Amino acid sequence: MREYFRDHFHITTAGNFSQPALQCTIAEMGVERILFAVDWPFQQNDAAVGFIRRAEISDQAREQIFGANARRLLRI
Image (cartoon, rainbow, N blue to C red; front, side):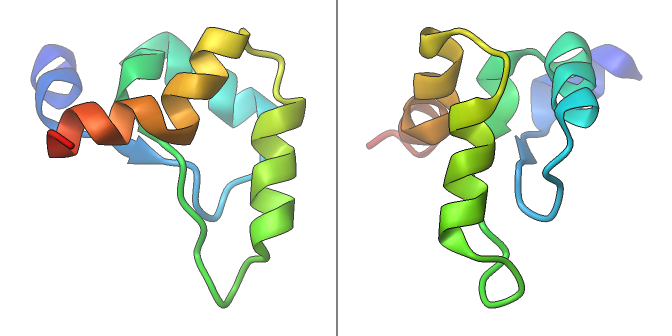
């Protein structure tokens, strides 16, 4: 089940600004399966951006979450 989920799903950051949850998701899914998202109008864009900027992750992981993963997934 774990492999199927990792191969067929992506996770967004919308609605959850928790460092432990982000670290757990990276450990289980891999950073390449995480997409930046904001649940507007229920969340503010600046809070979502700040959360990822302050995350205890590498600059490469941050770049992947902020856009590289979405570009790869959507083939743009």
